[in-house]
Image 1 (cartoon, one colour):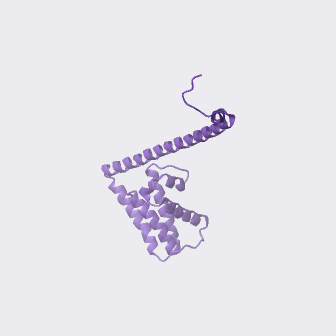
Image 2 (cartoon, rainbow, N blue to C red):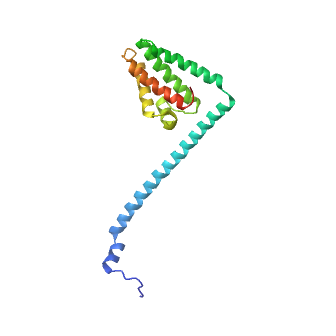
Image 3 (cartoon, rainbow, N blue to C red):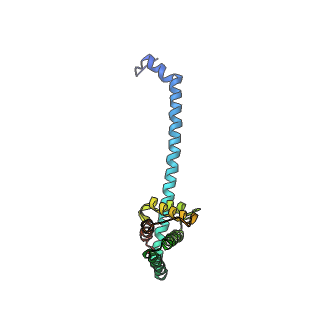
Length: 176
C-alpha cells in the first residue's frame, strides 16, 4: 500500500478509536443545539424588526393623514393628568398614575402591540422609542400596587417619578 502522508501508528489508532467518536458525537450535539438557538434568535430578531417597521409606518401614516385632533385630545388629557400632580393630595397622585398607565396602554395598543397585560406590551416596544423599559415596568408595577392596595401611601416623589417615565415614553412615541 502506497502511503503519501506519514501518520504515526498511535495517532491513527486514536483517531479511529471509539473515544474520539464519542467526543465528536458530543460536539455534533452541542453545535446542533447551538444552531437551533441561533435560528430562533434570528427569527425573533426578524419579527421584532417587522414589528418596529409596522409601528414606524403607522406613525408616518398618522402624520400624513393629519391626525392632529386626536393628538391634541391626547395632549389635553395628558395635561389634565399632569395637573393632578400639582395638587397636594395623595389620592390625586394615585389617580394620576392610574390614568397615565391607562393612557400609555391605550397608545401602545393603538400602535399594534398586543399582550395579555401592559408588561407584555412594554417588552415588545423597542427601548429606543420609549426609553428604559425596566423603568416603565416599574411604573406599571406601582400602578398595580395602587390597584391592589388603594390605601397604600404614595409620596409626591414616587408619583412624579412614575409620571415622568410615562411622559418620556409617550414623547418617544410622539403621542404627546
